[in-house]
Length: 165
Length: 200
Image 1 (cartoon, each protein chain N blue to C red):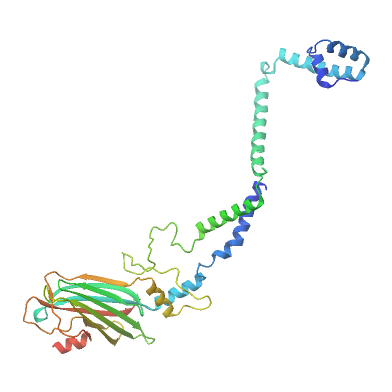
Image 2: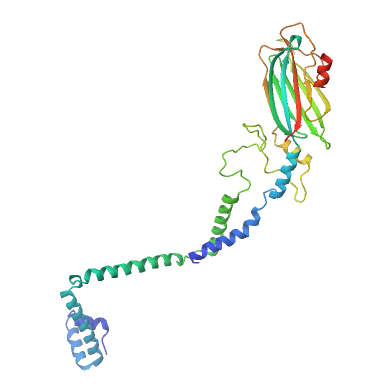
């Protein structure tokens, strides 16, 4: 074989194997991938979470906020680690056909009221149909309207869910 | 029997030894063909001797002629070298040549058109396809989602895939250490507007 034949032969080979590479290993073409990504994007939701500690006279003693992106049907887990408890809240938004949102919140609490006492575990699931952008409040440790004690707090998670623009 | 040209050339140059020299000399007297060959060699020898006595580089045209000849030699050599490289015959077994070419082609194509790597050259690599990015917390798009060949993947299929990746969207919040949280009953999920109205 002459050297001047090597490069044309390589080009021909490249042309022959090119179709093998037009699909990914799972058999999905780039069009299918783009279509699936568009589908995912249509189902994407933005979740804004404001976590607050509420004290005596409903005073906001501490707060933080976070913004996450998920897809309809995929939960966001929020873990709050305190001195005497751990709260795990799972926010699961479903985007309905009409644009409304069905929100499911699961709360899990591990609490030890005082040192030496046994730890207790609570778990509850709550759900609520909401409009996009509507604020809901999840109280994983229950609703504390008021308290006389200065150092006792309750947790509020204010949640807003909107389709991702 | 005539002598070959090498022996006649040696005879002209006086390089033959006895008794061969005498034998060739006797043969020359009777052979016209060998005599003419001897005459040719002798004239060439005389020409060389004349040139060596009056060398060309001593004349005025010598350096120019030498340079011209040298240029032509260089030009021809260069052209022949390039020509020979591309037309060089290489001996490679056909299966080996085919294998090497296929490997090179695959390598070249993979480097240029690799659709699976967010690039070979990308530095933003993560083992988890849906790991959160630090900049804006947008999940990375999986590249190996389970698409069916003929239809768009179903939502359940996608969600199952996302769950299988174990890439949950998580927020971890550390509460202030001085806070004591009180359990005040069952967890509640309320509309903010309803809750604020009830508190007023």
